[in-house]
Amino acid sequence: MDLSMQDVLFKFLGGLGIFLFGIKYMGDGLEKSAGDRLRDILEKMTTNPIKGVLAGIIVTVLLQTSSGTTVLAVGFVNAGLMTLRQAIGVIMGANIGTTVTAFIIGIKIENYALPIIAAGAILLFFFKKKRLQYMGQIVFGFGMLFYGLKTMGGGLKPLKDLPIFHEMMVDFAENPLLGVIFGTVFTVIVQSSSATIGILQQLASEGGISLKAALPILFGDNIGTTITAMLAAIGASIAAKRAALTHVIFNLLGTFIAILLLPLFYNLVYWLGEVTQVDVRMQIAYAHGIFNFTNVFIQLPFIGVLAYIVTKIYRDREGEIEFGVKNLDPRFLDNPSVAIGQAEKELLRMANLTKEMLRDSTEYFYTGNEKLSEATKQREDLVDLLEEKIIDYMTKAASEHEIPDTEKYSSLMYALKDIERMGDHSMNIVELAEYRYNNKLHLSEEANQELREMVDLTSETMAMAIKALEDNDKELAMKVVELEEKVDKMERQLRKTHLKRLNEGVCTGGSGVVFLDIISNLERMADHSMNIAQYVLGEI
Figure (cartoon, rainbow, N blue to C red):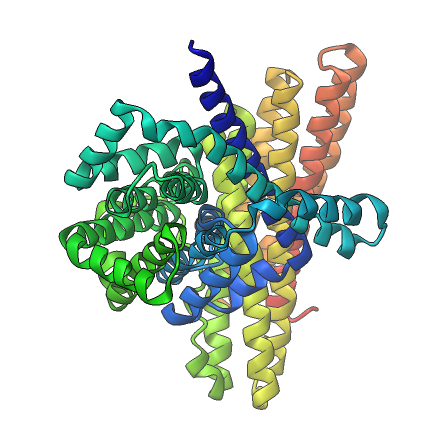
């Protein structure tokens, strides 16, 4: 390799690495400084699409990555903490929030990068206060960002004199589709739209690319950044896949519109640059901002259409978990009797989820099928969410009006905790199964058969308790009490027989601990089922 070309490549790759590190380090510092407020912003500021856009902007500015915000939104949808429509608003806002980085880069302060890095290092290493250390991390990352840009600029400068590079830039100017493809592929490779835009700005400032050639690459960058969310949605719920696909469609449509109006778009950006007397770096920042603001402005009224399209592409599958609350309509809070009835419906839905959790967690223990483990974890997240929402809903109903049936209200509140605890015990079984497979523990055929019998009896007890609660069936509740006694006897008997197997060397100590812990969790689930039955009987 020619020494000058080697120098170009090393400076470019090294500068890119420093830039990416700076962005990541600064974002981590901002996230630590913000603490749990990021999640609060996303959870509370998404009641309508406009608030969702604002939340997306705020979180992206704090994280310094639109991909990070989009992945968070996909994760929230997957956990049932956010609906698809709410997530679409956040994703749109993330696209606007990421333009801040381009404007920061547009300000020429790379000559002060090293003093900024030094200031950040002083805060990091000479102060013990966490808040000051986080501030140091932000300042240090900010300085590294510009130092990386300066290093990249040194590597990119000689490229403008190469005939092949000049021809490629002319091709991008004359054939925008090539520029879009290049921008998409490059952003997929570096996994950062901010890096692509930073390189564009630096290259343009060195005279290596014209504004006209840079615009299609910038549009493609917005498509490339969607790959991170798509990767995050692999193995996630249908709802999460829909959210990620919305991000792709949103940016594809925006790019299509921008390419159609490219001459108009170019003239607007060029005119703004002339009026404000800024250099080409800031013109690219203008272009990025105009593209994303316009894209959101055009598509925001069509969130319902976007949701419809992705729902048709990713259709509901049988057994797919339906996230979010279904019955807690705030309009019923003025009528406490109706509100408590709606809360009961959601509670019964929650109870059926715990029944499915027991089924999947124990089947995972037998088969090692990772999909069953993931399904149990997703249901656990949903059960925890529903518990929180139901308590909040019932508390509001009770605080605003007098509850006519206080006994039922109390029973439901008690039952809620028992149902949530049953879900926790299923998660314990998943963890025990993971421990079993990670340590290659073997259970004898006799032990497996005993477990299946106890699982069946516990499942029957749970199902009967839930049915008794749903129908307020006291006779059925009495049967639950009888079944719970059988589960207790079975647990004591299985404990004895398994200890005997351990003494005889049929099972190992590790597998023995797993077996005993599982039957203990099953017995406790039966206890919670009996508690629910006693609420129905009026004994608690």
